[in-house]
Amino acid sequence: MAAEREGWRAPNAAASGASAPGPAAAIEFRNVGLALGGRPILDDVSFTIGPGEFGCIIGASGSGKTTILRVAGGFLPPAGGTVQVGGKPVRGPSRDVAIVFQDYGRALLPWRDAYGNVSLALEAAGVPRRARRQRIESLLAAVGLKDHVRKFPAQLSGGMQQRLQIARCLAQEPRFLLMDEPFGALDALTRQALQDEILRLAAGRGMTVLFVTHDLEEALYLGDRVIALETDPGRVGRIVEVALPRPRDQLTTREHPEFLRLRRELFVLMRQHAG
Ligand SMILES: Nc1ncnc2c1ncn2[C@@H]1O[C@H](COP(=O)(O)OP(=O)(O)OP(=O)(O)O)[C@@H](O)[C@H]1O
Ligand SMILES: [Mg+2]
Image (cartoon, rainbow, N blue to C red; front, side, top):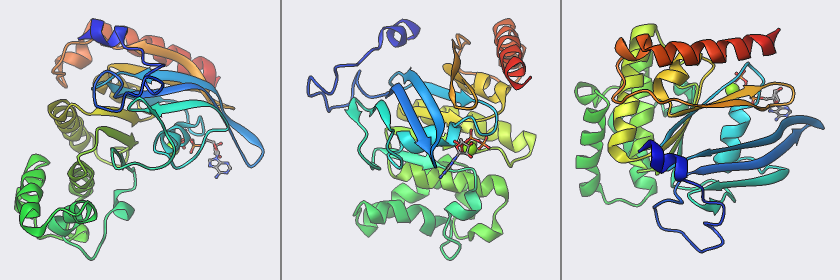
């Protein structure tokens, strides 16, 4: 698996006309630059996430993490460089790409119950009512909300609301999942449960994930690859491959010598940069 990932490079995927899922189905930033309000925000950002890989971005506040997700999601065009998702240049938002935001409260419709919120993505895709029911129920079960189908967002805990947002994104059946500090506001135990859930769901569906966090340990726990940003302007400081066995485990993975080694390496890097 690691060897396959190492071997993945698809700079000419678009040129060769590749549009089907396969080796080209991943995320590539190449020499991306961006300025906002006359200020450079991203400088020469390059990285690749292989198909089915879990990529994490870490960096201090203001280093451009959310900006990178907005560019990958097609919401913000880069001023320079190229961005490809699934082997095709990003030209705008795509149904293949789903985004999970940190602020789950605002991402859900308060007047729709859990069922109705997940249904939204299927309605948008034109899935007939009868086909929707079974898919919605199995998605809500997959994120542990089987018993809360008729509850409204305000009746759900933060962790449940975030599960609901994830279910809604999965209903879209995206090949690419972009997540912006999705577990930042949750308590430690809920956060760990959702980390494991997202790993299971992503692996089960073969999704490529780009996950933003400022929690170094979370990035190492989840990722196949961690991209550490430096700030002002945002640029890639280091990219580390995380060769830790899967499935990951909250106890043994976090005690693994390689986990501790990488944590130290990235911690020193981030501290140097902060200082
Ligand atoms: N619309 C905008 N206009 C001008 N500057 C912006 C705009 N959006 C973001 N910025 C600036 O771009 C930089 C990167 O912002 P971004 O939101 O990507 O950082 P971040 O790494 O996600 O930070 P945080 O960890 O706080 O979420 C910041 O300095 C921010 O002030
Ligand atoms: Mg951000």
